[in-house]
Length: 269
Ligand code: SF4
Image (cartoon, rainbow, N blue to C red; front, side, top):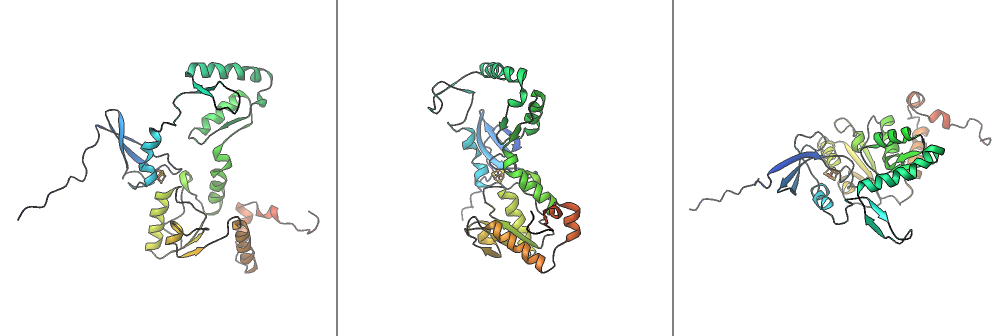
């Protein structure tokens, strides 16, 4: 009888492995990037990273496509056509920086507050904010201020944690978890492993989402809410909790601005 072949399950595909974090969504899973002949060949999850413990999603492993995308910006672009025509040429950093310095010097010398400085989603907002403060303008913001930071602040104030890089729910002790419109393309590895933990110990997972895919498909209860009515639904829940006297008033007074939202003279506000 011939012996079974022994497949090599972990062939060496690289001559170097770089340790970094994935930036294909906001939770920053730890990854090992295999490089061969100076080219990325393969991305795998890092088992020793606390966020994902080796798990990697399809989006994360295809980060290689983003890295080598022909659409990726590699140098500053200078507009050469009329605004809106989409005509740009690549320039060197030196030219870009001297152009920016020339434009900004006039504003800084006269009224620095006229500069409104907005940056995209990045990991250096403390540096961009510091730069704006040095320039002399209070008018600066970044993507996170409009998107995830409000979610993070609310999560930290209420459940002591939040999603993505801001933390995570208490997967080990929560007995009831409600997911509102959570999309699978953000924070997917930590949520997947967290939901697995909750379901293994019998905790209840409720998903409020117009579609029943992903997390909604594995939830214990799915509420197929009509898009745009989440706020009404939450207000209805709060109404019922107040009606049933199930609100922790001491907590609200101590940790939130809820007391300031109460109108004690109806009709006068
Ligand atoms: S969940 Fe996926 S896309 Fe997001 S950081 Fe982790 S590996 Fe990357």
